[in-house]
Image 1: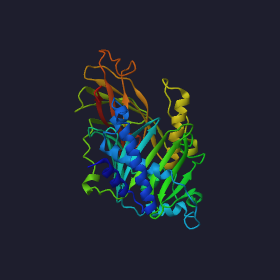
Image 2 (image 1 turned 135 degrees about the vertical axis):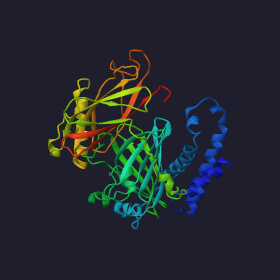
Image 3 (image 1 turned 90 degrees about the vertical axis):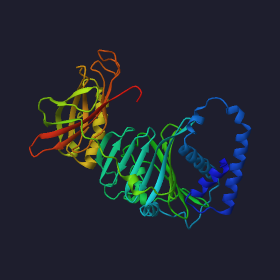
Image 4 (image 1 turned 45 degrees about the vertical axis):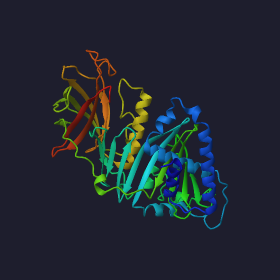
Length: 416
């Protein structure tokens, strides 16, 4: 199949009805661009990072669509009284009806465009594949994350809590119609086939310190988002999110997560008690995990301690910044929030450093790491590289202040 055929198929997959004039202009521009590309092929014969990126089938398809969208942005926009007043709330109501969508999330950094992840949403379930092959499964109740080798590295409540739409999820709630002021937002540009909305983050929004604005291109007929650009402050960099509503739907089994392997060890731990040694099985190179559950907060959100995350090895300002983020999350999701400290003993008897700033909720898990007690991953007594990765999970018991800590752990090698 010729490149022109691939691009034409990508155009046809965009979910809008283009005017004949627009269609003709797109193809004139694309063909002119191809002719220029043919002329410059010899100049691009050497090694080039973009050529490496473009070897990915997914990136090729997404990049072709990006080129087309860029051409569309070159059109002159004209206003009109009928669609110029289409409120953002109408767009959100349309997205709430979507049962299936394929999403590409790309990053523009300098002169490089690369895939961050792609995702598939169908009937309330989400699967996301990262650029390194890790997978995340969200069934509307629980979200589970697995690394490229199928090891579970995270477990938490679903991202779709409270009936959130897929588009609210991908915009981190910034573009939600629950904000009455935002729901009345109207497009800043109106074209023959697209509406463009632009949103500035409110001062109290989590991320307002780095986010400049979000620009959303919406199909004029469908009122469905076609692409979203997330611009960073003081930078030309942005994230580009593309939505494909006509991709072949994945079968139901695609959205089922793999079976999580059993924990490598577990033990009862008393809150603010002594260290507990957990014997580790099925994780080559690791003999024991040493765990202490040394804090729990379940009080008023406005009294959440801003030194909750602290350590002698951390800059106090960093600890306060992380604690503030935890406070905001606690205010939104509630608690309790626990603090763990974890270290390991290797098969050779070497004790690792201690990760003492782990914050977690009941029945949630995230990925953590630790190296040698001397610092780093190469400073073990035998000089060998050991990057110990682990995922702790805290569960309640029928006794007050007594909990079960499950530990999944492995050594990540240099090859990984």
